[in-house]
Image (cartoon, rainbow, N blue to C red):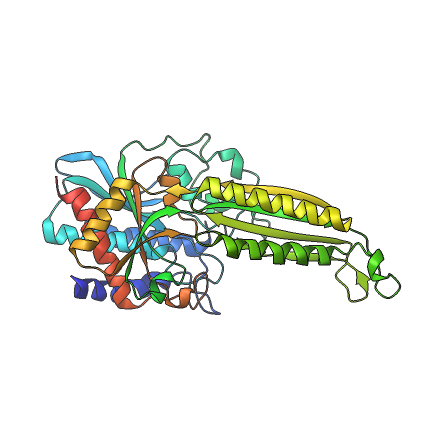
Length: 411
């Protein structure tokens, strides 16, 4: 089985990656771009040629279907998103869609038609790289996306979302789509985008949860003044305040320990010049944890600490919490089933959480969902250097195929 999947991946991954290949390296395949449309159309053609019934939904999610012989109205769905970040790698997202098709194709050729219907899905969008909206593909599957949310948004070149959609042959629905009720399970295969599996020499990750995220924009207001004539004791220096906040917060995060992570990702001091005390600094905070109560408690402490530091230093502070996403657990039954499968196959696996967001987090509150991770070399992702060994990719597709066999080909 592994040799079959090594060969299949070697034949299809370069083909799929050629559409949207970036001249500077890597891939750029943004929602409703010509490269995106070509990829979806060519992928549809390949799935059709292999005996799948194929269709696009209203927003461009692509499905390849094998109808079940006993339970045709019970759908086991697998896949991922087909879009990329700008100048990204060739695995994030698209490999999950490709793997679903390869696994189902092998199962059909080996065992015939499934008992339950299976569908491979290449979702239209997840990344939010072209337009300021994320999970457009998966949200539409469950009627969570409102046309009003995207009607007036544009990309960096001023191209309107609806215009781009129309140019690809799709029309913005007048109302949220009717949620699908036929999906009985969703399985997403994805590279880890981190270094845990590789560092521990493990081939497969069984994901038990996707972290919750809280994101902030913090604005510190002090006083800009001459760098030479303002004594240190009279300064209201916002970079000094930021540095204290950053160092003390990261020390607290280190003391808290895994799985909490804390990132200060963007810092903009103003006026940002060599000879002026910075009177204003704007920065971001990204905090993640698998437990919502722990996430809220930790960030609550951070907010209190920041206010205390600023009060001590006579600095004004504005705290804008603009993202507050709860952690999403995977389905316990599917996680147990996948774990048992790994044990039976004697796979070198790890039970772990996902520190990044995925389409699975949209599915999991609505249908039984699980995720399978494959190692990422050096933990690199969203980068042309993103890579996973062919052996690990094949092991991932094999694990996916065995899981789909249990869900759709067995009673």
